[in-house]
Length: 125
Image (cartoon, rainbow, N blue to C red; front, side):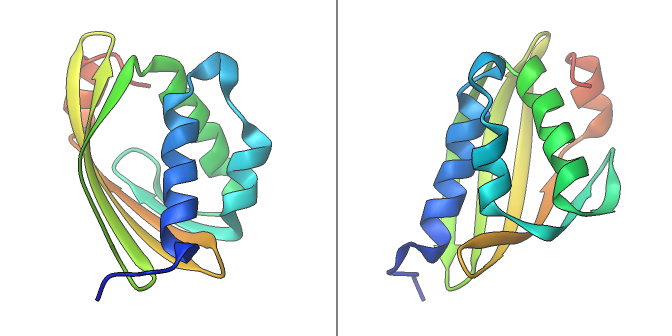
């Protein structure tokens, strides 16, 4: 079932707008506003992290090294979303998949999948 309201699409789109704005335009307040305070994040480098604040710091590190982001696929249904994108890093492209769980217009959990070895080799930190 496709989500016909904006409870999923607005926060996910806002998240990618923040990622692609670049480090000089990083809007920490806007990012914080779309994340649950007790956000659950899982990623290859960070592992399992609970709380929006550590995630926000990690996002800035990604934005600071990423050159561009090309969205390949995005699916939204009910309270979930999934995306597949390529990020151009200083030394090449890395593919990422993100899986979102939302509630009340906020991102409650985010699971990020990518090859951490490749990410670091391409200049990610």
